[in-house]
Length: 160
Image (tube, rainbow, N blue to C red; front, top):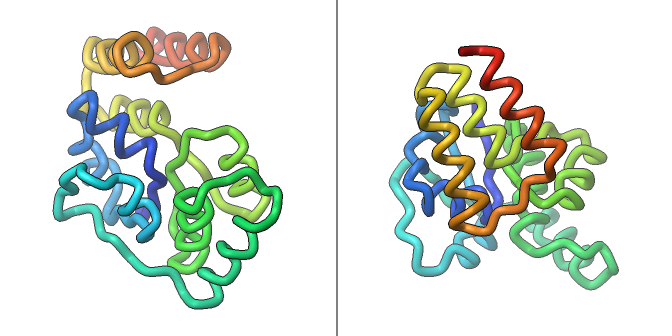
């Protein structure tokens, strides 16, 4: 399974020291150049491949940035790259970006979805996913709606 990631999932997974879950859950992880630029000083592991989007894709991104789409270059390039390489998923957390990606026919998953996938595939335990969720929300400032958090916790509790 191939995925393209936006910036925030890589940052959040890195902050909770769970970035290594990506190659456990997915065969190949790609990021576009705009995401690499947004990650600036974060040292990326070799399994995250920075890939250029096409000229047509770059022109689309430039046009979208000039419009009132309210998305960042990283989000737009991630969507374009996901389409161009026919990725199974695009990993992004922002709700507006996810809706736009879904409207383009892309399947989305977020940071929490990656943790759930790792949990379901038994790469992490119940206590580990709970610790990750706590760290994301209480230490690193990730907003998870109460509704989504309730669904995630119920899903974890049903598997124990």
